[in-house]
Length: 322
Image (cartoon, rainbow, N blue to C red; front, side, top):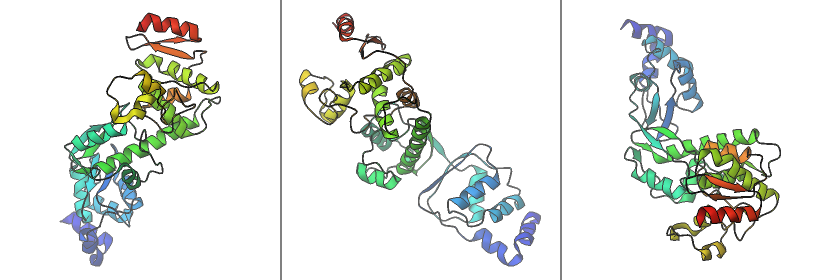
């Protein structure tokens, strides 16, 4: 009671009760927010003010301190789907009622696989199920017109019952930031013209890499081919272009049947990424190995044999695939 009386004195007798118990509506519903480990009450209050949940961060800090809660902040992922009072909001972040789970986006998944995983996730609200790909992009604020490759492979903490749209928005924003960071630190001699091209190349490297140590070399081969205006001739892009009709067996006719993703019939990069690349592939795409290799073939153990001329490559194909 003494602490509450102190609060009343600080806020004034007339306004204290009104402030503490008047509901505040989330700026959107559901409203997801993260409290990071070690965050102070002041940091969180300013975050709420910036995001439109509170109109006065200072008064919320005063409330928390007066109630003796300032040192009881619990890290976690939280979600609000209805209006709450400031006291209820304080209870939420100090009692840790976040009910978090985990959702992993796998490197190399395509968007169809990601949507299936979201639909199967028991701890998520499935708001995307009735939406088209284009509608999903609109909901998360993406400016791209194709969803492939736009979501960062990572393990995300999610609040039970939170929207799968909120998760996609987080993964999209994180990928945007990571791509920009890597692009700013790119090799100065890269033939790539824009961050989106880096994402496309990284997705190809992701799908072609069987063992991590080969990733920079595989990127180096494709960069060399782009510089020489050679066809990329990479099977994963052809497979992507076949879509759901691909039955697991890539045939010769598939390599000669033209689609926007057939890098045996069309020069340069395909129009979009073909999968979600991880950070290692993004870094490789913009920091490829310095090599004269123009070809590679799978050895059968996950690694690749690299060659700088066609005769050498043909011998490697005969050795490892015949």
